[in-house]
Amino acid sequence: MRAGCPPNWQDLEDDVDLWDLIEIAEDGLPTAWVPRKEVLKDLLAAADDTARRQVFCDRRDEILEDCRTALKEVTSAELAEYVDMLDEALTVAEAGHLAAAQAFAASIFDTVIRREIKPQKLNGYYGKVKEEIQARHENANMSELRWGVVFIPAVDVLEKFDAPKGDPVPEKFNRHASAHAVGKVQYTETNTVIALARSTSMVREAHEQIVEAPPPAAGGTTP
Image 1 (cartoon, rainbow, N blue to C red):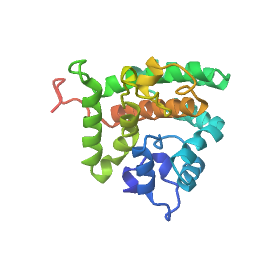
Image 2 (image 1 turned 60 degrees about the vertical axis):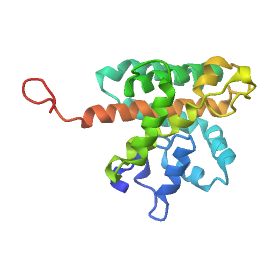
Image 3 (image 1 turned 90 degrees about the horizontal axis):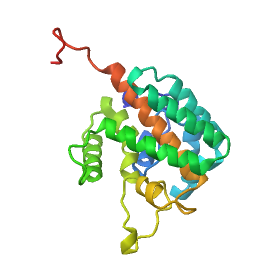
Image 4 (image 1 turned 135 degrees about the horizontal axis):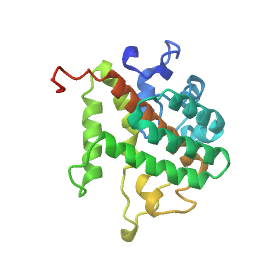
């Protein structure tokens, strides 16, 4: 199980229950590749979801630093634009322009999702994405655990709300709300840090998938 975990989980003490970290990811919080071990331990010690989300606010500077460190490891040419955009979003956040950083991170998140899970058609796309991520996460063997931990938080982000029907604006980071419900309910310091960490985690994992992919077979075709 540990062999299939993200690198930032590897140095956690043996008495840490890794399934607790998986449950935190399933609740919508990024835990893979970023943040660092000490922040993960704070997340594990937090009493509830509200306290866990507060950790992202309280440890903001360290988490943004972790994002930069993770992105430096992304050398795949096809991901270069994502790295540049996330680097700019991090700079904006560090300068204190959190709403702008969240909006930028939300767009990057959406772009990376569409790269990883190609839309066959626009109608019903996000519902299909959630189904595919959940199925792959639930059916993964231990060596494939990391991908699920990276992407399962996206299911929470892709929850849709219907404002015309009276649905309240989500307080947690939400792709739909970031695009269509700009305001102080959705745009918060906590959501900004979570959005940046989540997008960084996905881009870092995309690089790893490229690196780990088997080389093309002779003749330029894959087996």
